Amino acid sequence: MSAGSRIPVVIIGAGPVGVTAALLLAQRGVRSLVLERHRGIYQLPRAVVVDDEVRRILQSAGVHEEFAALARPARGLRLLDARHRVIAEFPRSSHGHHGFPQTSMFDQPKLERLLRDALARRPECELRGGVEVVSVTQSVTRDTGPDGPPGPVRVTFRRDGSDEAEHVWADAVLGCDGAGSLTRDSIGAVWEDLHFEESWRVIDVRTSRPVRTWEGAEQICCPTRPATFMRVGEDRYRWEFRLPDDERLDGPDGWERLRELVAPWVDLPPDASPGGDFEVIRQAQYTFRARLADRWRRGRVFLLGDAAHLTPPFVGQGLCAGLRDARNLTWKLARVLQQGADERLLDTYERERKPHVRHVIRIAVAVGWAMTGGQDRAAAIRRAVVGAACRLPGVTAAVSRDLSPALAAGPLVRRRSRLTGRVLAGTFCPQPRVLHDGRRVRLDDVLGDSFAVLTAVPPTAQVTAVATALGARTIRVDDLGDDGNLSAWLARGRADTVLLRPDRVVMDTVPAGTGDFTGTAVWAPLLHTARRPAEDRPVPLPRSTTP
Image (tube, rainbow, N blue to C red; front, side, top):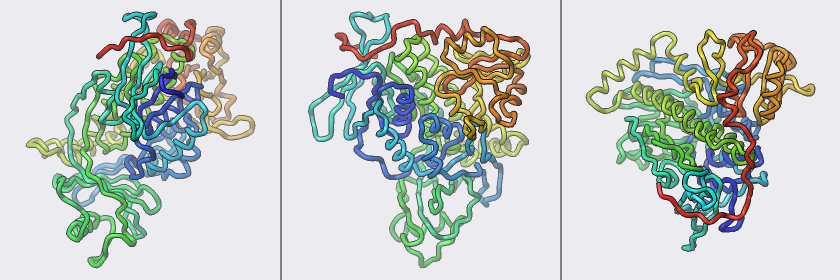
């Protein structure tokens, strides 16, 4: 793509969120250009855990088989006291609602490599490394006017070693450029502080020594020495300790301190030395913060991942949240760009994702308080209250479940009371193994990338018309050979039929015995495709607007 050309989507940042967004758009035939400041993959591990919903997102991006080869299922999360006695346990199943282990450990550089390899195989995508984006400017054009649909977005950048500025025009820009996001600044967004900030040392180790591990994540709840421990791979482990910024764990004195810190898990003899059978791959100081951008969109410029939200890592949802952003936004953006759907469809991205992210951040902060209580005068009280709550029956199960709560009612979620039988709307459809062409496959491999209708009864003429209008496959659940899993799910939800969005969220239901969808007047106007879709075309003369 030449400088000054116009392309459908520019993605700023080639981390897992940005590349996954590009792959999801490519699955729908949308071309994108990914701009990345670094030339290669950042080789030091950062994120190490994803959940089963994210595994399903990687499935939709076409990389789940490769990811399965490098992922390691984990048993869940434990909160331990200072003497390593169990306070609470949050177990995770080896087969979750989405058809994958509920917790999987992995090495982020390996994930990034397989994502980039997949990107290189897609003709719809181009990745440019060694490129620094210097400005993102939304425009209005003479043919749309200030009150019309957004004009093109101008992305200006410089290549490594060059002072010359170049630019491209995009119909949409996705800012996946991290906590220091230039894209966030460009739309005038500011951080909302959710009141958690602590400095922690992250240590990644490779060792052949015996390590005492539960095969899940452990959070040590101690005001003076809080810690996190988890096994990442066959011989890879991660420890996180809250330490002063100036305390080092390298050199002779640092090595002795490190040996003391890891002693509850692994025995290192006094004469042991760094390297050998206990190799510190890296240590880095991080400030864990809880923040949320006050806006995630201006015009056709969007924020995803750490550009939009920062969460402490205590429930392993940082990267997960960013990949959920990508899944939620990309199908909507593709429908607007390719099929001329209403621009208001894009408003539902922030409306749906922001409350979920706020909820998850609050859970992560609560776990952080259980570990440390914070560092102010109320720390001991908070630690005691949260620790006691975790001991109440049902609380740990509720926390595990609430990491992915149902979406609130909105234009794309037709929810009512339990009495009307609409309890499934806003939740994810489960993904069992089904029989297809004589083979056992996952449900999404049969449903495809568009809308879908699952029904336990013969579809009415109205249901068939809705499916046809949306390009949705209609499937009788009794024909799937899934041992009755989907039939039972519909029965528990008091529904005969469900309409699934492309991200597999239930958009609408036909309550048992009623026959038809009744929410079409709410969501149909957003999804109609009567307008001429956007195409590559000469760039209209724009005038820049400032936030």
